[in-house]
Image 1: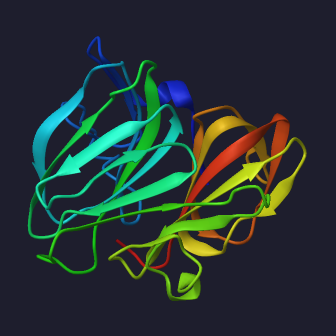
Image 2: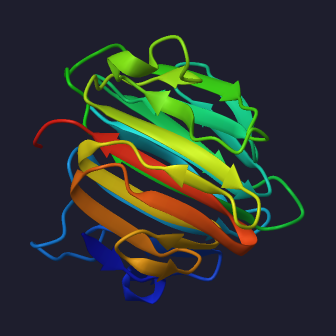
Length: 235
């Protein structure tokens, strides 16, 4: 179990953008921190109004975007477009190659987490999917997954049969049990929490667990929003 505190992450700041990287990204490189399981990017980003990422390419990545505040406009070379906002999950499969832009058309900053996972097959046709979720149940809800056990319950499908990402939005004092997995990545997207075996976690803290075995997470006094990746074979 490795605890990674929010302020220990790599940081990119460029006026219109503030981005915190859990793994090596862009000009930040640490050979000992290039990913975890199938997860190769986990960027916590805030983009100013009227700015964003212009059209740029991706290939052979499953890209999942989860918005915490504001809205992010998406457009890509396959003709897909949409607005991603809190409670809506987005997945873009770059496959054999795609170009897209991400822009803040709103009047307030947009804050989101974008995560990249390696697919289990390469050169697939590029694709895009988004879906609304009900997070009022207080349970761990499958958001983007290729796991067989999530078939029929995940909001959107991933082209990676050994990985899945779930979200829990917890009221103060509520708790969930994490799934058992060879690799598990827990990120406190909002609020605070207490993880069995790790102790107190603040907003934007993360924990990487190898051979997770159903640890309990309890929300702090302000509640918590948790992003959980489970991965079931070695990278």
